[in-house]
Length: 180
Image 1 (cartoon, rainbow, N blue to C red):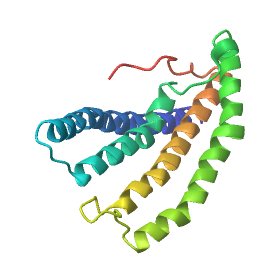
Image 2 (cartoon, rainbow, N blue to C red):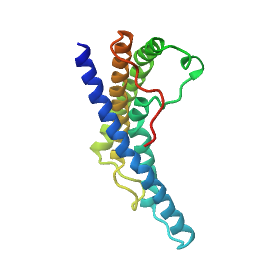
Image 3 (tube, rainbow, N blue to C red):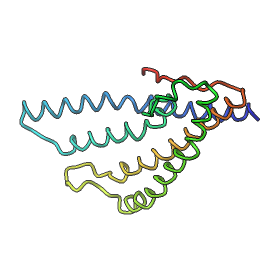
Image 4 (cartoon, rainbow, N blue to C red):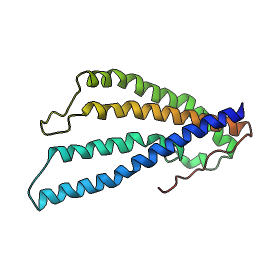
């Protein structure tokens, strides 16, 4: 059974790793797009609603899409005053309880509350209120569901890692996020 659980956590971790690394490239695109918008505005006195809205899309995709990657690398903010001093098993218990009582209920609630919001947006193929804006708001809103689903998946992996640590089958994943 522990081998099966380890395989599940590895697959989830690999998916979160892959999505996080792919999405991280959008940060470069975001910076370049902002540079283009500033140059266009101040030097050429031109503007584009489409380009300005693309910043919102990229920003949303980066933060919502990479949340599971951040969780995988323990990069989310937490009160670390006590946690950092705990031994590995106590940290595993804190993570397990945190997943069960905080992460899972919040991720499920976000998914449940966002579902009708996203369905309505897809039904009308909702677009920008600006005629020259990005006509794919429904895709942007879908990122909320992606966020909740991937965070829930990575939470399952964290829960299983914690359980396996409590059972002395493995050690918790590293504590500090890697630099991309």
